[in-house]
Image 1 (spheres, rainbow, N blue to C red):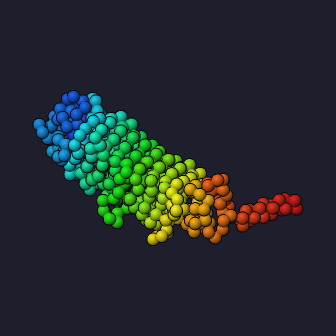
Image 2 (tube, rainbow, N blue to C red):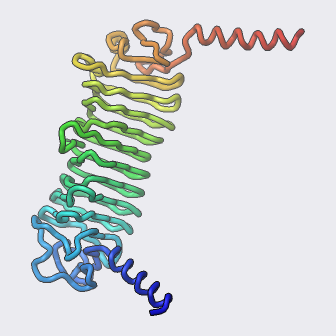
Length: 329
């Protein structure tokens, strides 16, 4: 066997092993998720009768990837839980829509699997669970809830909405990271503990957040919420802002301290000026609390902007004066 033949066989084997376990073709009615004629299995054939049904594990001989990113039509109105089967990941891309008007659920294949929504695709379903990792890029994701398992969670240039059940973690003590660069909306309390939730030039609207989480607002991000509690620490850069609409302890530190940490230029809006006084021990500018130094915030109505401490301004002025005097000598 010559080298050319060997390389050709290796390439063919590589292609075969990387092929999706199930690929949407739309070869049937081009809309029914649970019609076998709309799929091609990893052998290049139409799956057998009654092998793709709602509420039952959906897989192929080799498992792996279930992909809806090409072919004709799109499964835009399915009913019954879409169970991807053990070891299977799911990718929705190519502008396709996987949606259920009745908000049916999607479940993943467990450890090591990934839910990917990309390339202008839309995922609009009920509860999503069972995937270890989640990657949303250039897409629209609208869920009733998302249950994570401590894996990665990224949302890039994506409109990401979680409903009243919001985001929760399946395993007590697990943490997750979420990076958002477009928008993140939730109508319920975010119950997952985030090792790092980063809003990078993003807009977020969340009812509330509870848990020992770190939240970073950067590059002009805005976050509107009602309350923060149970040890949430928020870090806001000079270009970003946070608004808490709740009254009567919106920064709740009764059990574990919750803190708002502002860079100079960052903005914080509370329901009233009285809230700033009551919550002053939890609001910081460069490590100094509002309770200890009220001059660290400048007010316009109920919106506060972090400003340099007077001592810092004096030092800057003295340094500038020193340079001027040196030049005159």
